[in-house]
Length: 111
Image (cartoon, rainbow, N blue to C red):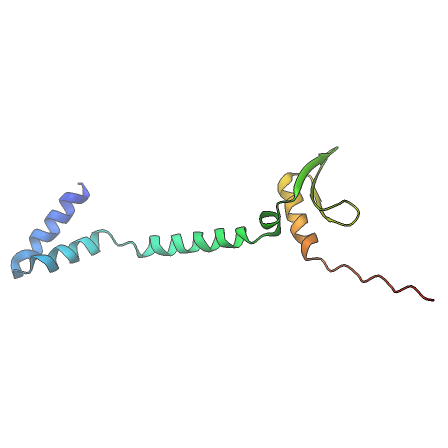
């Protein structure tokens, strides 16, 4: 049975009271309950928003391969942020960890 036939049958069974607009509205609301889908879309939106905040998305490090390792590099190698891994995805994940890693302060030169 198609959706249109289900709606038609539901509306026809509720028209007996005479309020056609309310009957159509109730039948459509019952046939097309989208509350679960709204929750799913909301969760997907939050997931995408989280992913868009990752350092590898915001700063777009250069991705290169060195032998068997993948490197995600932002800035110069000695002073920049570097992530390494066996795959590009693992290099980007390591880049995110390196981005948030605290660099120890250099000790001041003694005079």
